[in-house]
Amino acid sequence: MAGLAAAFGSGAMTNSIDEIEYTDLILATGTNTTENHPVISSKVKRAVRQQGAKLIVIDPREIDLVQFADIWLCQKPGTDVAVFNGLMNVILSEDLYDKAYVEERTENFDALKAAVAKYTPEYVESLSGVPAEDLKKAARLYAQAPRASILYAMGITQHISGTDNVKSIANLAMLCGNVGIEGGGVNPLRGQNNVQGACDMGALPNVFPAYQPVISEEARGKFEKAWGVSLSGKVGLTIMEIMDGAHRGTIKGLYIMGENPMISDPDLAHVEASLKHLDLLVVQDIFLTETAQLADVVFPSACFAEKDGTFSNTERRVQRIRKAVEAPGQARPDWEIIAGIAGRMGYSMNYDSAEAIMKEIASVAPSYGGISYDRLKGEGIQWPCPTPEHKGTKFLHKDRFTRGRGLFHAVEYIPPAELPDEQYPLILSTGRVLYHYHTGTMTTRSEGLMERYPESLVEINPADADRLGIGNGQSVKVTSRRGAVTAKALITQRSAPGTIFMNFHFAEAAVNLLTNPALDPIGKIPEYKVCAVNLAAA
Image (cartoon, rainbow, N blue to C red; front, top):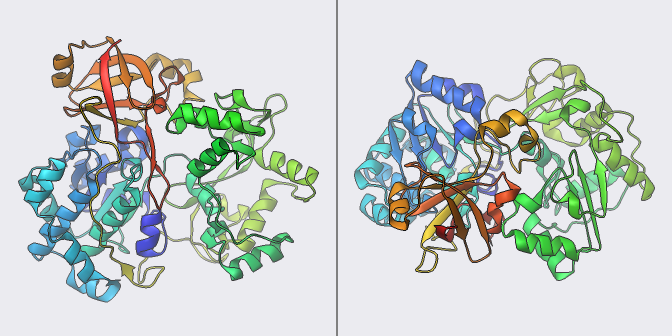
């Protein structure tokens, strides 16, 4: 969310999911919403079918939402900045932007104008493959909508230009006055059910809970007083930096909770070597995952139905979860395991319940200040909720941005880190399918889901399949500069010529053996969505 934070001063979803049903236009980019966020996609479909909302889809793959769209911009993978700059070029050249909003609520507008000036529709077509006339139509449709909501997900962020992609989206939304209004906004759809809550609680290398910077002496002093310890002002490492440190030997021990990097991280051969270099690997999870199988110590933890607590979802809504069944065997709630380890290491965490932790959260995290278990008996509360009397916040930035004025960024298009060549002539992109979730730790153990989608498939355009002599259902080998996997071919128009798609759910065809670990220099997110591969019959 670094791009939104840079533009607005905060990086969360700006509006409520329910508002999507009552907006005038939805722009969905880099989000296969029907398969990754099916509840949200149902609201998008209702907005189109029942409320007459317009829908623009920007995606290199013919996802299900395309059939509901007024216009689909099918760009080459990794050319998102060019497309968004092109949309803004049309909006500015045709004088369709919101002049009053730009004047009153934003800054650095002249730099934006200068940056997008060269991104004419014809130039963007040469970079992205999006027809110039389609770009113009989409720009006019977005700019002329009274309220427009942008939805995006990992198809935007998982690039070396991921932060720039998000900044470009923020630029477009501010240019047309669509931030800080009901039914509008820029809305990142989180990839997992409590990613927002984890970030809110400081599970990031640069902030304490509620995004209070570790480099701030005031913030450090506040938490030192609350926790009775001295705290470092040094920004920590990201996941990929930690893996590299483990490989070099500068990271000696690693504690992994609820994550399976042996399936989810790029360049898995490097990941495995890195984990095996550690002096100590501890894994805390509900199943013995591929990562847990490498661990020196495994802590069995309780799943969501076996513990009390809260989840904070993609729209900033904090909701109660309540224990329904007892955890099996020695499994315990995560907080109990962590508190037990802390106590044995000399720091006492004297909580008697999850509710006691929630009370501490309210005391140190201003955006959660008014949230308590007593108030979470209904459908939950959207932060910021600073006081017990506050009703929560339906949408952000109503009168002003967190940083004051919204900041336009001059963003230039840069190509992906790896492009097709003679040896690796195709582009591979990765993602999810409806019937499975993340690394398949839970869903591949479900008989019903495995019956619906039992194995990994390689989506190949018919033109490429004909050229390579590959038939539907045939076993194929996909090779990149980092490794090779074998899976069955699915011949489909969903993937454009020159591109293939694979999901990353199955260890048997672990697509992240192939993917490129090149990082966005700011967000430090790997470029999962673009890597050069070769394809041949197995």
